[in-house]
Image: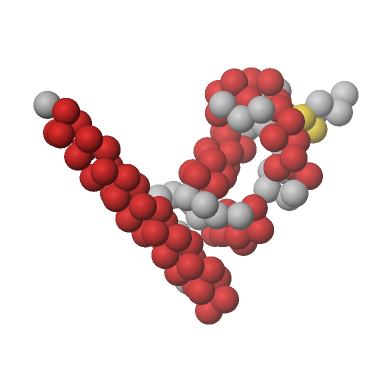
Length: 115
């Protein structure tokens, strides 16, 4: 598929897809005329990049992790350095969850005090 189709399917802008390619996260095939030709694996990679990015991971961390992730569970044993990075990422997510939980409690309190 061409870059516009991949953009439509994933909800990622063409500009961002080119950026991912420039950063080495995507490596699409090229047609004889030089157009990018993305396949299902590229589409899945973009979806994984989005999920990992939404979790707060930087592109550098995603670059390290993406080649090792084939499904919902990693097919590898991370080295100590990557394990530390992943542990930090989990901690950051836990902090966000706690902050959102506190915000929810405050907002829910406003609703119940109005009723």
